[in-house]
Image 1 (cartoon, helix red, strand yellow):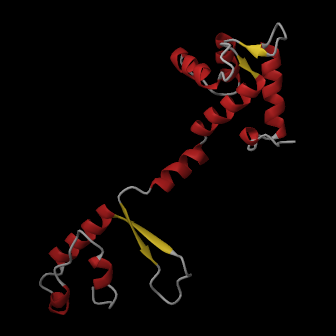
Image 2: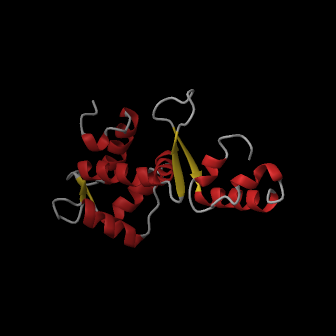
Image 3: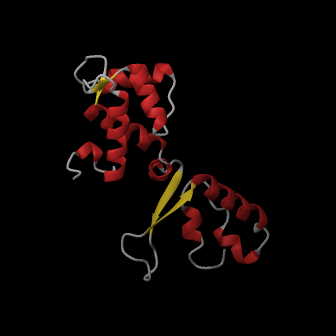
Length: 163
């Protein structure tokens, strides 16, 4: 059962493995592991941290302030550190950031409502400059040039199919 919100994305197998590692390191059976034991435990599950990182983590996740980590704290710590290193989570954060992009709504009748297109500003500037430079002598394009590279004018001027 994965009712605990902090471990919702851990499989039963991962929880079992975490418990086994925790219990192996908790040599005196008191239900906690020390800073040194924590470093080894995390390394065992694929998270290798420097000493200063371990101290910061203990300070953050040691909710009862006893200087050790209990099983619940260890699960929270593991899921937090795993998500920082998980390529899928990292990719999702990067994709959602959308820095330096223009977002345009769908414009055709075929577009599904709510569809958006994202274009990097650098691409828009480069295309506008290329069009201005290479089509400046084209008589058919004269009424549409120059294309302003600092806004979405490029997309409006391309709608009629001449550019």
